[in-house]
Every structure is written in C-alpha cells, then in structure tokens.
Image (cartoon, rainbow, N blue to C red):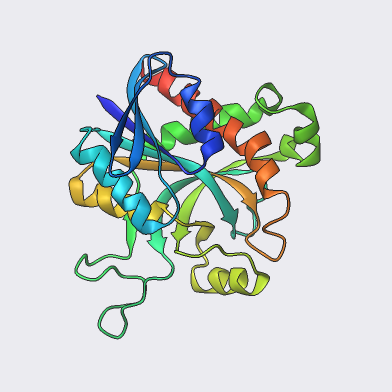
Length: 250
C-alpha cells in the first residue's frame, strides 16, 4: 500500500518531510514528489499547488506515476458553517465545486457528463482522520506553542465532518461568504483544491479523504495573520493528525 499525501502549503510540506527519514525526491510534471516512509507506512508526499487544475494534475500524477492506493489532502480552509471557528478542523465527507455552473444545460454545481455535483470522500478514511484530529485537539498544547494556543483560543477547537466547497478564487469578503452560506447551507468550509482531487479519485476509483484546518472565516478579515497562523498552528496540526493516523494503520 502506497499512500499519497498532498499538502497545500510549503510550511506543511517541510513539517511532513521532517517525519520521513529516508525521503528521496522525483521530478514529475514540474513537481517534486518525495517518496519514503512515515510511521512505517510507504508514502509519497507532494505540494499540490493552488487551484483546481494544479491539484488535479498532482493527483493524477500520484495515481498514474506512483501507483498510490489512496490519497489524503491536508491544508487550510475558510470557515463558512455557522459553528465553525478559526482553529477548528474540518474533515470532509464530500466536495462540491461552488463555481461550477453549466446551466441551463446541466443543474447548477453538477459536473457535466458526471451526473453528480457532490463527490464523496472515503468513509473509513474520513472517520479515522476525524478521530485522529479529535485526539490532537484534545491535547493541542502538545503540538502548538502556548502563546498560539491562547491567542487563537485553540483550547476550544473542535473537529467537524461535513461538506466542503471548492472554487478557483480566494473567498475573502463577508458578502461572498454570505452568498455561499445561502447557496450551500450545508457547507462547512471553502477552499481551492479539494473537489478537483475528489473528482480525479472518483474517476480512478482511488479512496480519498481531506483534512482542513480553519484559518479564517472567509470574510473581510480573512487575510489577517494568515501566514503566521499557517506556520504556528495549521502546519503543526497537519503533521500531528497525519502522524497519528498513519501510526494507527500499522
């Protein structure tokens, strides 16, 4: 079994590579894929790049070139569900492209010729990752410095499971956030890659799951301290959750 791990940010990639004592790199499609072992599992780790096309290319290479048997995506997202706060974790149970609209030929959000708008994640993988995230958040001080725990109120952080919306734009205004909430009331978070990876994995029959740390509320303050949150919180979350999940697979 070879597990493909896609990280959205350089900080996450660096943290994951530190966990791989035997990593070796290969260049494919202009990307660097790091092959090795993490918690005894054979993994291929790669930076997804930003946006749906880039993520789809990366996922396809993982499947076609490296023969991964499952893919996990980790990164940050904007919270749009009313109960989702900064510092929470959302484990996706499905993805939809919020900017897909081929109407009137097809219903809004439906991917043409696929017959579906939502692409589900693998149930078993998602449940395992949700449990790993809950365990990490229950002892968040072991993974994140005390100052960041206090500043971002991480002692109240929770793990959610639900729909995630994907689109090729960074949602950073209250008006756009409200529009998404009204159009997709069941969506908990919004990001820029997940639905593309979910569709590729659906086409290939490869199990897929995704873990997103909520970095902002996708509103007018979405840019505030984003870089620092990623380096001090989200990157540590990703490494801790995936480490715990991989260890349980042994």
